[in-house]
Image 1 (cartoon, rainbow over the protein chains, first blue to last red):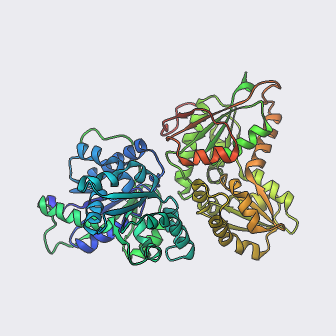
Image 2 (cartoon, each protein chain N blue to C red; image 1 turned 180 degrees about the horizontal axis):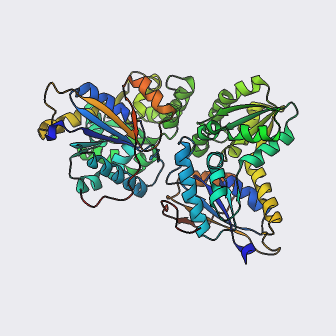
Image 3 (cartoon, rainbow over the protein chains, first blue to last red; image 1 turned 120 degrees about the vertical axis):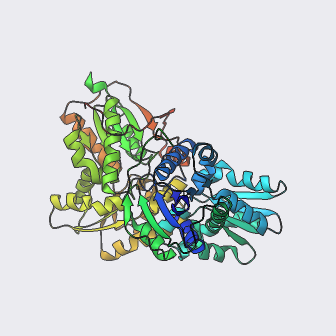
Length: 274
Length: 274
């Protein structure tokens, strides 16, 4: 029965566990198979061509796991590879960009939205495109914040140093008058406290992880793919390289039971039939 | 003629250009072929198994370029893969660990040496092993500094924020009384100014890039592989992914003419004959 199959969640590393956390809270009956490409993490500084190729390889691996839908829990991969995935894959795909953009449009009062993310995400212009498609009159100010992922991975989540780095990245956006900020990277929700300290109470945060989970719920409903009520959900985690320090950070910060980690080899190129 | 062949230099990204700079200064007659695995950078947080596999793939690509010797201008790769490379490759190999360790032993007065590097380098214990093999009575204090590479790649080379991060990492080593610090990562020479500001005048720095270049010179002399006097040297740079921001940072900081960048696809697995 297709409904009993797992939801496949993909991220370049383990940052996408913030999306898993949101999915577990919202859809406790669903099984989740998480695949993190820790052998090639991070994607955020790599070229669009390379990010697209890696994302295709990883999602093919998820299809081979028999997942019923695929969540691209990585902003860099969503920003760059989603059109290609929608055209190639036999299962429905949800990214993090459109749900985040919709939530931002619903949140802003003054029509000026800020977006932060990795270099790959910001360079792609994917949030601007999605936001402007929803409302052509919006003003969007974006900024790449390459140090935030390493700060999260170092575990400096509530730390004066992180506050200073965040202030440096965000002050120009605050000065320009944004009233809404999209956290366009799945690592960033772990810095929510620090980001709120810098932004103060007037700028609202949009967390792409939580909005992505809501979009997955809507998709499963629409396609009658929900696991039956009473089914016990669960989480399996597979990585392409042995887990490092950050898995511990994420597990503790998210209070997520990830169980035994499986190791998978990257399948290079696309399998013959999908 | 074998002497006219290039020296192959490998790094996980473009940090190894600090070694290239030292080689160009010391051996201006030599041709250098540089290969950076920017499609999978960084290696420093990845497992030993994965770092070894990637390093083998990259050095095989250098062998196919017809290089006369290979320089592993990456501490993480040297720390983990050098024994395997020495056993597998048909050309002589020089890493960065042993030259750095020798220079540190020659520098220390009180016999207490500090080592900083990536997680992979520090976890391997390669510097401790090399240092203790040279002098069993040495005291060695090591620390992984995962944020320094991202700070360098962001271009914050002379920046109050970098000084603060460095101070946090180094203060415990200073308190414990090191008098010599090995920069066990090819990115770190770009932070020399900031590191010296934190250390003050009593702790001496050992830069593995410069010492590696001296070891290459000695190897070429020993094996009669030097390019003839009067030969014009040069530099070719190939990367496995399109260059990003950091190449600009490195080029400016090092005043290095890298010319046109070539793009190479990773060859997975070992070619049949080497």
